[in-house]
Length: 86
Image (cartoon, rainbow, N blue to C red):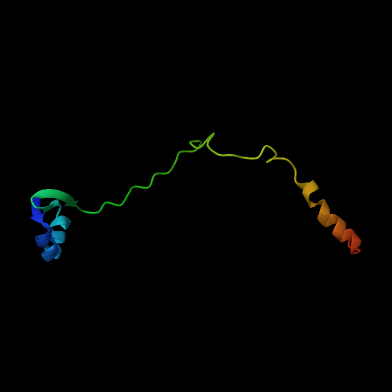
């Protein structure tokens, strides 16, 4: 693991990034005290939740599965008043 000061890191960033691409880790220090680590980027792994893992965590209305035909009665009244057959 290579340690460099901030000024050197700013001056030689391209060279340091090439070293990181080869698998090295670079420690950036201020006055000899490590403050950051320059490492290769690893994208986070996306996890797919297994079926049923969200059980009990959601909310659903108690009448979710009830028929909704009654909710559309207002439209039937408009059709019959225009002379259209439902």
